[in-house]
Amino acid sequence: MTFSQSIGVCLSKYADFKGRASRSEYWWFVLFIVLIAAAASLVSGTLYALTALALLLPHASVSVRRLHDIDRNGWWILLGLIPLVNLLLIYWYCLEGDETSN
Image (cartoon, rainbow, N blue to C red; front, side):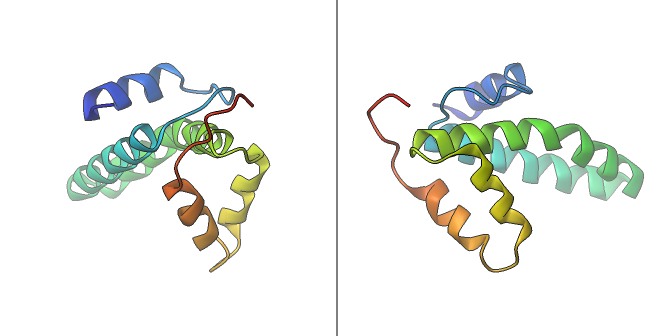
């Protein structure tokens, strides 16, 4: 999946927490979020806050779909709230997806 395809899919599935997301879809979208957030922060703090708020739900949905791809429950995303333990999520996001259906 390319950068533009990933952005298109993630934004079209804005709040879709069902299904799967490939590694490339997830990581391209994370790169998009970082680039947009960096550009917005250079303009103003308010724009950065609005951008972060607008991209929060699609980031959560693609994260849950990525967890589904490695046969994990979407509720594991809550590990991101625990310092240092959230490194486990990063490891899981790097794993290859499972070929079987959920």
